[in-house]
Image 1: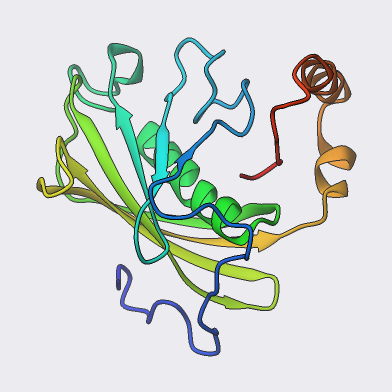
Image 2: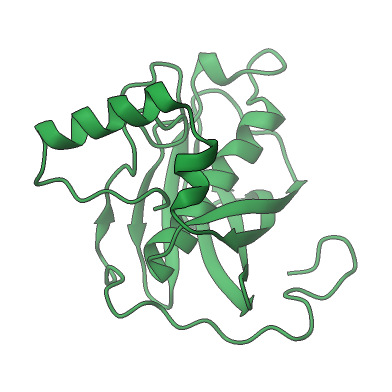
Length: 193
């Protein structure tokens, strides 16, 4: 996919192999953190994105636009659409590579309006790696996997150590997370995925 005229992924990247413990095709992906604005259930006006692994290292995510997600009357806010793609791409990187990563760069290409009440079907894939850099891209279609393309995005993610989150994260939020995890030890959790 070329959005700004540059080759994607950039020269010098290597093909991506999923982690041996990556979920297989058909696996529904759980929320990675209940307070996540993108996938968490505890954020009322959040995006509540749901994802599942497809064939060929593709992760399929859905995001239903509500009135809380408006920018212009009756249309999704562009920033929230970018947020949805950040979540979908980050979930793809985290779940398929099974290592924490953060967004380094995100580009979005808005092709058509996304109305309130519509569901965006996002197909995200890994495109290449170069050291700590991970390249991924996605396409979002309106109301069906084969609907019209509304948004395209590509992102550069950077692998980080877990200490990135413990050093820079809010101490109170981390304590709340630890307490929730102790209450539900059966739930496997990673920073990203």
